[in-house]
Amino acid sequence: MRFDSQSIIFIMIIAGAVLMQWNIIRYALFLSGMSDVISLGDKKSTALRALGLVLLLFFLLGYVFTAVFGSPDFMMGGILFGGSIFVWIVLNIMFNLTDVVKNRTLEISEMLIGMIEARDPNLSGHSVYVRNLTKLLYKHLPMSLKHKINPVSIEYAALMHDVGKLAVPEAILNKPVGLDEDEWKVMKTHPDAGVKMLAPIKTFDIIMPWIKYHHERIDGGGYYGLKGKEIPLEAKIICVADSYSAITMRRAYKDAKSYDEAVAILRDNAGTQFDTQLVDIFVSIPRNEVEACKPRNAF
Figure 1 (tube, rainbow, N blue to C red):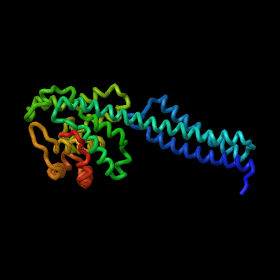
Figure 2 (figure 1 turned 60 degrees about the vertical axis):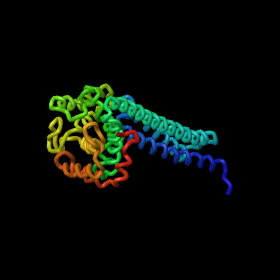
Figure 3 (figure 1 turned 120 degrees about the horizontal axis):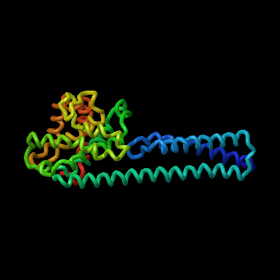
């Protein structure tokens, strides 16, 4: 089958239009995911991202108009086809750079958290463990709950949930026996201290309540007296993950409990300390997946 020059030009324009449509879909999906604590930008950057989408749509209309109403030559067909390839290449570079930034930011955050936990031998690997458990619990949430949560944001909240312990004296952190009443009052300040430490990072405003209220109880007996629906869903999730980690980790003043013992404690306290639905979901997760969340350097 032979093609004349006009057929080849038309094919190039249609191929370019199809590729541009794919570029627009990928870019739109990319923008929809730019709402987490790392990707979220200011009003100016948000406006520029939206302008980029508008321009891509405008370019697509140019392809359609040229194919239907224009009389393009071979040069124009090549430019339109090459333009869609160029946009595809630029988008791939941008997507890859974004992934690299997110990964490096997470690695740096883990390193800083490790330095914080080095002050307290009882916490070695705890925050990473809580992060891993939080991600696992999120993975097993029903869609009715999952769509309410940004997975990247809750991952950072879980990783940073104990950053406020930097403000707690080492004598309290490293005490080989249980804390007395006055020491507990100091320890209970760590969520609010963490929020204050992270306040300069403006995009972290989203996750501040999750960090501050991760010790709240469903019955209202937590640090700040919130109860039931007053507690953010993300904070409830982190609470379950944090408690499981604390129960199963060895500390100077207590031995680590087994998976079965920890699950039993979660069940016993569902509806009072923990959200019942979240506990039911957590204990339904295969044991090997839960135990795989423990980092190598943890207790």
